Length: 205
Image 1 (cartoon, helix red, strand yellow):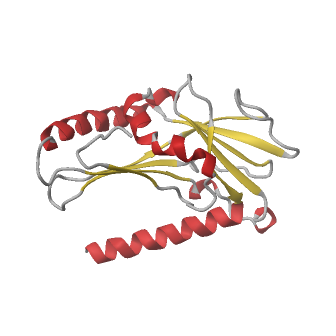
Image 2 (cartoon, rainbow, N blue to C red):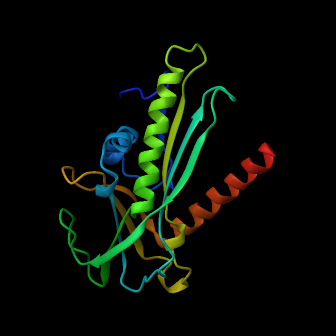
Image 3 (cartoon, rainbow, N blue to C red):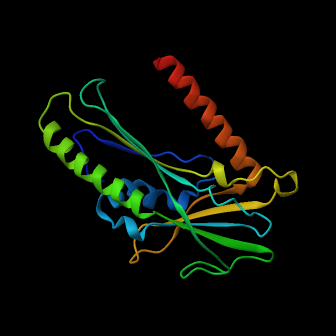
């Protein structure tokens, strides 16, 4: 894998780590590079869910990005949660299988504001990479995540329904699956992740 910073470790963090298909790991491991090179306007998140799942207009996934130093204080971390926007509900997006019976695909993309923010982050990253080049204690990590908890409606009748999440980073690349499981397991793992983040923040304070 191409190193984006000296001694860089690229890591994908999802709202739920279990449920990530092993066949997707090669694509996931290159996602940080894709993020720095692909057109943000071409990123598309596709979620296959029960037709009864109808998220509200403000319930959208968030693309999480954190660039942190290997040694604390080496540089100011860059941490962003970029909201995506709902595009459409379809029975079969191009390149994906048809939705199953009583199921639907929900498609999300970056709105212009998130696209612009991601481009600014890229510029900051390139400046940071140049600044850290050759430093003995340089380097850091890039963490990427897709937070879907806002989409996971709290309805006991839907708890055991299947949830699949697919990502496309370019019109020249196909979708690849990044998570699958039940809606209930997605909610549970998202809640556990929120508790861990809260605990870390308290420790840092």
